[in-house]
Length: 543
Image 1 (cartoon, rainbow, N blue to C red):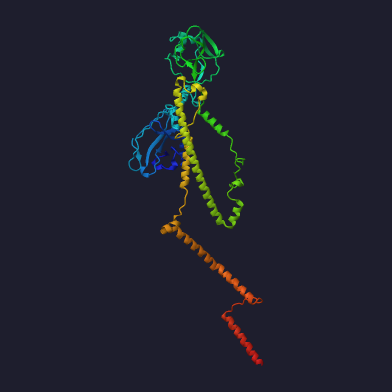
Image 2 (cartoon, rainbow, N blue to C red):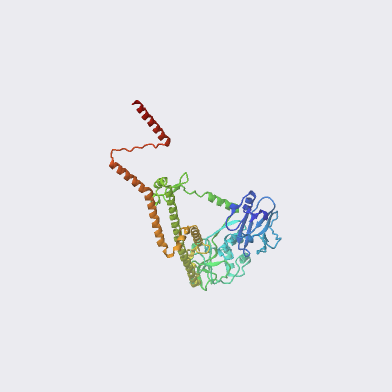
């Protein structure tokens, strides 16, 4: 979604998007202000759609926007113009003035579209954020019902797979017998008749926690020689009604008779005796009245109170980054190359060091890919085993619950210790599946970035067919012989010849010294001849 009309449609005007975060493309003060106010997400509401959340702001007026899907080809360029107007209306409204999709090229295959401005419920918001709704998740449904009872902003906390807890019934002591003994109680107790209406006897009693807190229960003590019910302590009853005759109470909603143990009764068997209490079942849920601003302030305080991570060397990780940004502190037993030797080598033969570094990088890259492959195989093995084990445990639990249905299921035998939450990390969106998919993506990306093309050096050898290896060996041998011959002919042989000449000269005349005479030009020769003639003529005149 971009700010402005079609002429301003660019990545710089991006104000909202679904999927990956593209906020780095947005630029400009007005665009950044709208980006803080708008949130665009995909939702399953009303057969999939887009949820556009507009946060409150200052001022009134209208602003044009372009809503468009991200497509690869420019031939499929689609867009919808949207105008958001900030008004003083108490309820939002939407006006759809076109029922066809606007396209910059050709006709569009998308549409028509409808804009729905009905305020979303908390369940719709949770469905948009998590994909889970109270219509298909009983845990979420219970928390939503508890939150709706408060009629204010609140934070609801409840554990996984909660078990109902026993608490004393809210009926006053003087109305207990009139209410539970008759379906039409007297006038002074008639208000309880609407709270706990008469119902038919329930065969399958609810499952509750066997851990019961000591409380002030209103009890009845049935005296007789019949079946003894339960082992409820006398000290838990703050008021006890003594009954001598057979007590036949009526069944009412949300109240039960508890005589101790793991069993609830709506009616008593004939000729029963024992001490029993009238109880209700309460869901273990905590509600904290709290506004959004108070919640966010506590979240910010929790972030600020987190200690910073240690950046100095520790016993577990001795490495650190020095002042010039070079990693230091790797123990010698884990080093691949000695820094001192590498420094001396680079000063003498720097090209050798470069080639060695390339080989070391290839070595590390290769072993990182091997590590990624082994890790992926290990995760896949664990994923497969955990998925099958979790499915088997779930199936076995269902089968055991069916076999023990008459006794209240497995949890009626173990009580609160039965509440064990098994995270489904092997589901399609589970943490293990997501991590495994990320590892597969990383391995694929590393493999796609690996490999070199050496075909330009090897392709011309394919003309020799099956004799490729033999010809390659012969050519390598010839190349080595030619290199040795050139080295000997141009360097070694002249040096040896010079040494032999000196040795022979030294052997013939050991006392001779080697002299070097300057080379004379033609003018120097004629000058010398003229001087010699003058000497000869002078000698003749003297004689």
